[in-house]
Amino acid sequence: MSIKIYLAILFSLIIVLGASIYFFTIYAPQHLVPPRVVSYSPEDGAVCVPLESCVSISFSKPMDERSVEKAFRIYPDEEGDFSWKGLTLTFQPKGTLQKNTTYTVTISTEAKDRWGNNLKSTLQFSFATDMWLVLRVTETTSSAIQKAMSTLSSSKTMNRVVILPAATYTFTSTVRIPSNTIVMGEGKLRNVCVAELEGSETPPYWDPPTAHCVTTDETLVMFEVAGNNVIIKNLKIEGAVKKHESGSGTGIYISSYKNVTIEGCELFYHRMAIHFSQSQGIVKECYIHRNYRNGYGYGVCIVGTSMTSGGSNVTVVRCEFALNRHDIASNSPETVWTLLQCYFRDNDPVQNQCSVDSHAHGGRTLRFAILNCTFRNTRPIGLKSGTGVIKFNFFHSSCGNWCNAAIIFGTPTHNGIYVPNPKPDVGKPKLHDIQIEGNVNETGKPLLYIYEYDFPDDEKGSRPVAENVWVDGELIVGSS
Image (tube, rainbow, N blue to C red):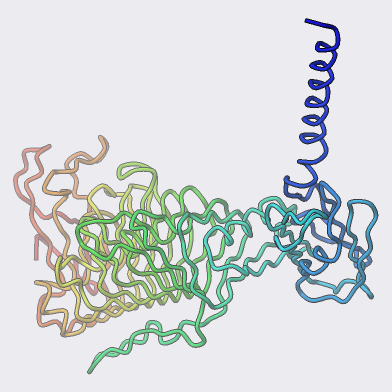
């Protein structure tokens, strides 16, 4: 090969190599790669931000400044001026930022670089000028709600609020609520726990409307509490478990956390509307209905780490229940629950289970209190374990269509299988030391029925499943 041909080939290769280097290191990054945000301030979730602060955002490449400024939003609105220094945009409010205010800054994907490439993804961050970080969700998806929760999780403040304005929010994934957080809608649930004992029932309703969280996934856990000191308030939470035969979705799941409050919410079409596992909390002024999945269908489920260990401590106050398989289902030996001024109505006609239930696995140590509640058109109380009080409740005449007694103390079995006590209590009735007092029974059926059972771990023969039961000051001897 002549030296001229060799030089020509070498020169061509150098040109190709140079062109490649130019394309991949200069042309492509500028002309083809979309811009991105590399930093911003104040940081997401920052609190106690000085009122004199400005907002700054830095990009990965030169930007079309006008398009970025048009894509910039700050809520609440603030008048101000833009300035640029290299790749950094600064927004300087004309006055100072407002006191006690949470700001959310957004730059949409309408922002472009100098070569017309749109911002790779929307930027959104929030900060507060005091210790309270209050976020308003502006998109109607579960991922948008989770983005707000993630901002709270990264913040140093313990004063956290997420507001869901009235809209329908589509849930495709679980929203995890961090500790010290209030998540709330802006509507109001009316007519809750108003017992209408004659004529047709007027169910609770929303006025004004609230955030409606809904899913089409019958397996989805919609909200999961992921820390202590959480409040869930004024939300309408609709699952997809609309058949008796299938579905495992849950409205609100709490496992191993304390001081959880669920207030003024409506929950329906779940396998379990509210599930407390080894947790402590209060449910008040909620409307819980149409949770009727076969074998589950619980309005409020109160259990420990398993059926036979641990327990939860839950108070349910002024709630209304309808068309659930069990309105209250409880289990586990350390469980404690109280029902106060609740309204239980309208049994699920397919399964005809008791409104209030304790499973046999609660043993002799489960504790309960049922106080000042009203039962209408339902099978009221069926307990298989525990000790406690049942006082000042009203059993409407319509309950007589569903039950052979207003209060039933049942056999120590689960799905037909005997559940033995731990060793210290072998052979003892699981139900014991129960005070029944001041109840009004209009069912036309007995107030109390106590089953007899032949406990298989002793040889005493058949005997009542409850002991030391008092009704209006009288000790009940034997079964009834």
